[in-house]
Amino acid sequence: MTSSFEHPLRPQAALAVVADHLIKRFGELEVLKGVSLSVAEGTVTSIIGASGSGKSTLLRCMNLLERPDRGELAIADEAIRFTRNPQGDIVGLDRRQLQRLRAKVAMVFQQFNLWPHLSVLGNVIEAPMRVKGISRKQATALGEHYLERVGMADKRDAYPAFLSGGQQQRVAIARALAMEPRLLLFDEPTSALDPERVNEVLGVIRGLADEGRTMLLVTHEMHFAREVSDQLVYLDQGRIAAEGTPQDVFDDPRCRHFVAPAA
Ligand code: ADP
Ligand code: MG
Image (cartoon, rainbow, N blue to C red; front, top):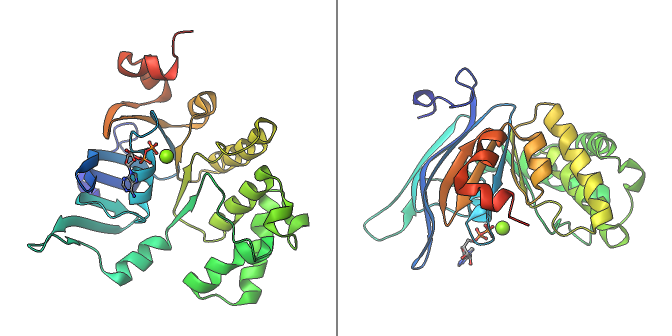
């Protein structure tokens, strides 16, 4: 599937993500109504849209926390086609493929979701040991490297409850990086923070963008999205209503009311 697609903004680039006509329902409610999206390797895509428009669901489909009812999804070199069998069960993914996919995608959540009973370092090394099967010693070296990267090395032995929200989120970012994922997902990573803590987290994310990490970011920080993104996607009631460069989307009459509401 991947080879038949060209990224509209970067025709030459390899694609890290291709979602083709994803549909996701919760009971009667169709939350994603056929979303198609591609993300070129080494680029940042931000998803914006009103609360309830399906942003989190779309992101959660990307790492298979939610399973789409229909559509196709390719992440790096794993392609999956979702459909329903005659019994109505969603098919299109076996356990081994799910594990391979999960190892390629890491997510940072609004509420940090650190394990309270583990130290900062413990939080960062747990998944690499469990999912990738690397030794504690190797995972510790990796963990220390990424804690350094987010400016949290000196807190390696602290417990999450003793950290500010901004510090917890930086640890959560180090935890995601320690999986050395092909794709990083951020779901409103600064929405739960005190205003004075927002910039320290945006600064880390900006640094990752400058490094050429492939990222998909849901955010309400419009200035940041505009500045850091190669591609912007405006989701409205489960459909992509506008997409393109940040400039294109900010100028698009269909979303101007959203990105720059009249004062
Ligand atoms: P956003 O992140 O843009 O605010 P969401 O993806 O969280 O939107 O939610 C989109 C819609 O799907 C909302 O109406 C929400 O109530 C519904 N929804 C999300 N998750 C579930 C779920 N697990 N079960 C039922 N409905 C859900
Ligand atoms: Mg959400």
